[in-house]
Each structure stands twice: as C-alpha cells, then as structure tokens.
Length: 89
Image 1 (cartoon, rainbow, N blue to C red):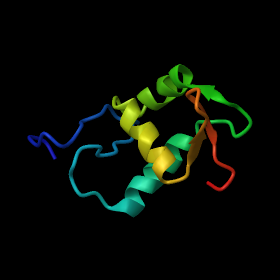
Image 2: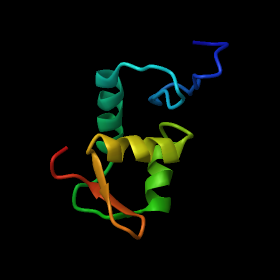
Image 3: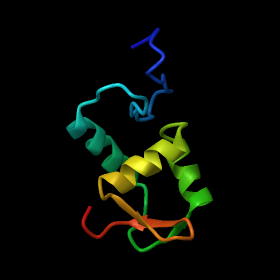
Image 4: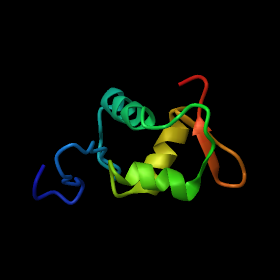
C-alpha cells in the first residue's frame, strides 16, 4: 500500500480503514468499524468531540469513520451531534 495516496499508514495497534474513493472489501470495512465500536460503551451518549478522541486512536479521519459507522448502522446520532452505539449493531 505504500506509495498510494489512497492509503493511510498507521502505527502498530491501530486499525486502518481506507476512507478515500478506493474500492474496499465491505465485509472487512464493517469488521474494522465494529472493532472501533468495541471501545464504546452501549450505555453512553458521546458528544462528537469525545467520540472523535476515541476514533482518532484508530484512524486520523474521524469524520469519515463516523460517517461510515452511521452508514452501516453501528452508530446512531441525534440532531445535536451526540452519538451512541446502535442497539442493532
């Protein structure tokens, strides 16, 4: 993956999810997003800033990861940028 502008190289222990317009195996992407969600408590509602801090330990593009987690039903959000783990995830 080195040398491509569509990949992000992360430190050991971090999960990489390709967030650019490159084709990615959806099953693998969802598995990584669920791995990130494991760090979240199902009973907590996270303000965007707090959620970003957790996501940033895995990937620097926190907005893209949040969008993917909403898209795949892993997270839900209200109109005030508060997020929580979906009961269906």
